[in-house]
Length: 439
Image (tube, rainbow, N blue to C red):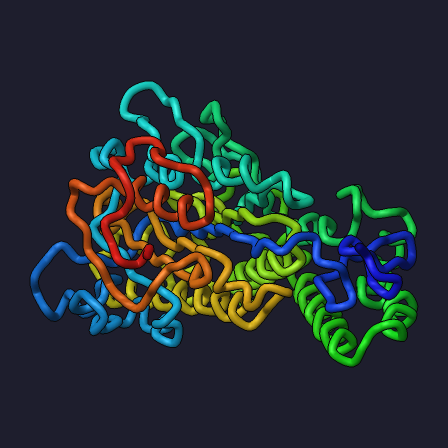
C-alpha cells in the first residue's frame, strides 16, 4: 500500500507549459520488485580494419585483439575499451550465413534480423523489435530506434536497424531536439507555444521547471535531494550540448555530397558531440525506464549520410569513411576504429556511472556494439563487442572466436534468454551461443 509520504512513480515537474519526467527516488513507491532487463544495439557501418593476412606488422592494426581467452591484448583500434575489460567480451568469427555472399553494405539491413536477402528483398523481424514486443507493455515506450540520418532510407541502404514482424523497416529518429521532447511530455506531444517561445529565448528545461523542483525538494530527504540535483545537472548539461548541436541536428536530410557539408555548421564541433549526445539521451532514457530496448545506427552504409564525414571532422583523417574503408592504409583505418572505440567507451561510462533503484544501468543492460562486416565489406567475422548484463548472469573479460558453423543468431537467442524472454529460436539460429559468457 502506498504510504502518505510516498510519491507516485510517474511524478513530473511542471513549468512554462511543459512537464518533466523524473528518475526513481527513494520517496517513490516501487512499481514492482522485478529488476528491469534491458537491451541496446549500436551499429557502425562499413566494417573495421581486419587485414586478411598473417603478417604481424599488418595485424597490429587489426580491430580484433591479440590472443584469445582472458589474456587477450587490445590492438590500437579497440584499446580505449581496455578500461572496461571486466564489463565486455570481444566476439570473433560470427556472421549471418545467409548474408555471407552478399555485398557487405547490404548486410547492414540484416545485422539484427539475419534475414535472407539473396533473392528478392524480403527482410524479417529484428531482435530489438522481437524484444520490444515483449518488454513494451512495462514502459512508456516499447523501444527507441535512432540513427544519424533518420527515417528508413531505402532497401539495401537503410537508415535504421529495426524491422517489424513483416520485415518492414521501422523509421529511426535522428533529431536530438525531437528526441529530447519525449522525456518531458507525459503524452509524447509537441511543445507548447509557451515552451517554444522560452526555448527560442535560450531558456532550458531546467530553467522552466526550477520552481517546481524547489517545491519538490522540500519534501525529499537528503539522499533524494542529491539525486534530484544530479539528475537536473545531467539534463542541463545534455540540453546545453544540444543547443550547441542544434544547427547540426536541424540540417534537413537528403541525398548529400559530404564534400558540401552545410557551411553554417562547424563540423569540428559536430560529429563527436552528435554521437555522444545521442548516447547521453539513451542512458537517461534507460535511467528513467522510458523503454528497455534501444537501437542506434551510428552511421549509414556506403558513404551515405552525415557519417561519411566522421573520419575528417571527428578523427582528423582527410578521407570520407567509405573511402577509408577501401584504403590500404591499415594504420589510418585503425585510427578511426580507435576514435569510434573512444565514443563507445564514453557510452559504457555513462551506463556504468548512472544508476536507478536497481543499481548501475550497465549491469542490468546487455549492449551489443559492432558491424555486419569486416575488412573491405567481407560479411564474415563480424567485429562485435558484448557488454554489460552482469545481473543477467553474463561473465565478461574474454576474447572468443567462433567457427563459421555457429550463426550469429545464436548470440541473439542467448541474449534474449538472458533477458528473460522465451526464445528457443530466432531466424536461422541452431541453439544458444556455445560460450561461458552466458552462465
